[in-house]
Image 1 (cartoon, rainbow, N blue to C red):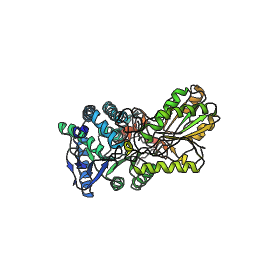
Image 2 (image 1 turned 90 degrees about the vertical axis):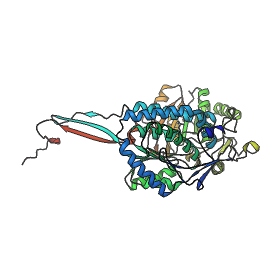
Image 3 (image 1 turned 180 degrees about the vertical axis):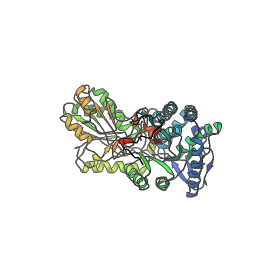
Image 4 (image 1 turned 120 degrees about the horizontal axis):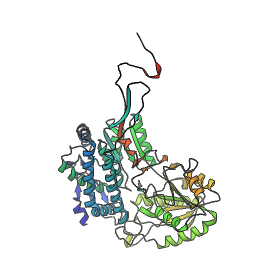
Length: 507
Ligand code: UN1
């Protein structure tokens, strides 16, 4: 476990950080067991309420200083974090793979997303622009500007234990905010490793203590952030259940939340699809990260003319899949995060069979020495009816539902008829079909692709979705606006005081 040492991780770690200073009684901790082989990797101390108060105070004080740093100078700090991540990509990718269970390739890919968002944020630090608007009054100038917001609370999930934090943090940093991160209690060591990396850069550049903070804990720690009016923005990524709870708490204090929640993503495979692309896209989308991406392909809506061919190709492809130790590059699929996730996977299979689903590729838990954590499951495929209750739910596991359709209107209606609205795709070489799918009468998701699967979005685009996905947009495009407050300014440089709307007020 060379990578643990390289990342400066110990068996027992302090779990509360204010940038460079660490707090916490290491004896009081969250234990992190790898789903790879169930061994204990290490532990991280839980943040107490007292430590949380200290963190918020430091973040508040740091904000007053940090917001005065010119944005491009803040960008320079983020550039250096990107460099530090490049230097640590090998080890951090391994840790992600080991603690979370995704394949090593995907672990490295996740760190690459972090590096990419750093680059994006550096450029952004010179572009945090507002509009200039023509005033209706003579001798007036009107414009808008974006100011730093305050403290951003960042709640992240186990499935992308480092990248989603970086999407939020790197943007928040260049925007002049300070951050408090509450990572998933299932991947606490990844978070400690990230803060250690940031810490080195902060020390060298004398970044004020409190700009980047880490608190460790379960639901309760998330609630502290959600209910705390000192937290200007709560950006939460995770299940719809969690998001609804967070949103209600933040709304009760009229705070700002940014939600990126569950998906129930579908690919439509048209009769005019390039079937090789379609099947490859579906395969990666359905089994990548063992079906634990919010963008995972959960439903395949296939035209009846190619249905049997697609079935045959999928069956063949699934037969080649190797499930096993994610650190071994020969394997495609690693374990689920824990036994609870395995139980949810089994429950979904049972529910699907009960509703009349027929399994084309059977599921099940893998047994034997190589699978001793009990978290390795077989990716499976079920033929279903679109209206099944289980098909409308997001099960965080590699279960793919196959649905047959006759015409595109019907396929689009099926695709949209779920509570979630994150990612979607159509596989077609037919321009009319592609355009219909992308039109206002097409997919209702935040992400809609043509001849690309549902997962693996680039960081340059805004990432998020509609309906129960929460409506938020993180990462690229103008998602940075979430991390700033907008101000409209009107300046009168004339010698009179004309009122807007033609109102005359004289005494
Ligand atoms: C997530 O699962 O929460 O598009 C994020 C993707 C990745 C991000 C997924 N870039 O699959």
